[in-house]
Image (cartoon, rainbow, N blue to C red):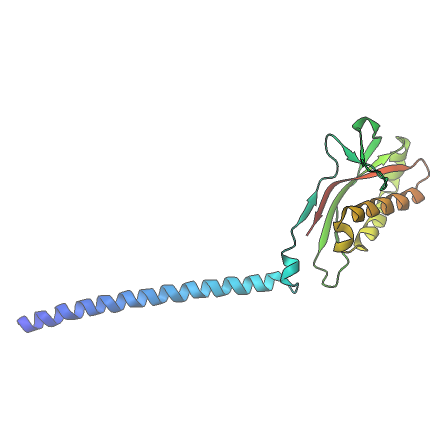
Length: 185
């Protein structure tokens, strides 16, 4: 009888050890599955862009501040004007467009305000709103990330949009363009 009790006591720790080992193996396998799944998900969501482009920081600028605004003259050294010098502002809806690139994975989100010469021009802009949006979208989608990332690139976009829109209107002119939102992703 003493031998029977000894055998039961020895088998209990062996079962407990194998049970603990089985739990550890299950936990390790589950952690590996989760890690592998996360890596596969990141690779699939990341796209085909090289890692160097992935690490490019998101560009977000607010060009119109409470104290100063940008001039449309690229040769201006100061590049600021007092708020009292700004004419009537005509806000446009947000534009979200794909940038011109090989992969087609970058997009630009821009909100603009147009500085008008007179109040009567806002009526003409309201009437031609779809055409204005089309022209602005065409200009923005023709740009690459490299073209719009620099200060000169943004200035070039402003001038190109202003020239295009001024050629379309007859009741006045647009004196400036201000980016109130500029996000590249």
